[in-house]
Image 1 (tube, rainbow, N blue to C red):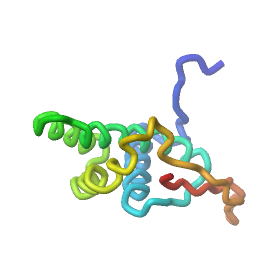
Image 2 (image 1 turned 90 degrees about the vertical axis):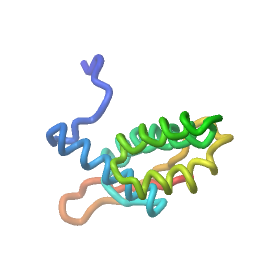
Image 3 (image 1 turned 120 degrees about the horizontal axis):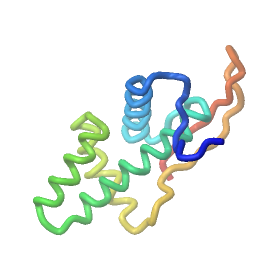
Image 4 (image 1 turned 45 degrees about the vertical axis):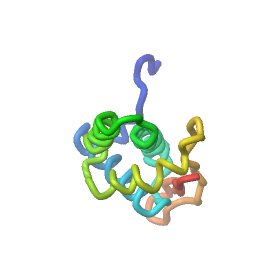
Length: 124
């Protein structure tokens, strides 16, 4: 039973998994769509939606101090100031009236080398 186990381990170390998810979310924010394996896409969706929510809070913040706080939170999660700026300026304002569900996953067949299921993760 998987009680209290809330994420996929993806058969890599913790540091590798965090770096991989950060890179996937950076690509998602920068390009709007990425192609990866299905389990990685499902995990990146969780991480990406959390980052978009933080960016949304930065957009909706009333004062400059709160906006700076949420921008720094997003920077600590994503790690790239250019991507965080794009998130806060371009992407988050589009979703300010949406209550979640910022991404969608399409199944895209199987990879030729090892038959692992591919998926396309994109912003709604």
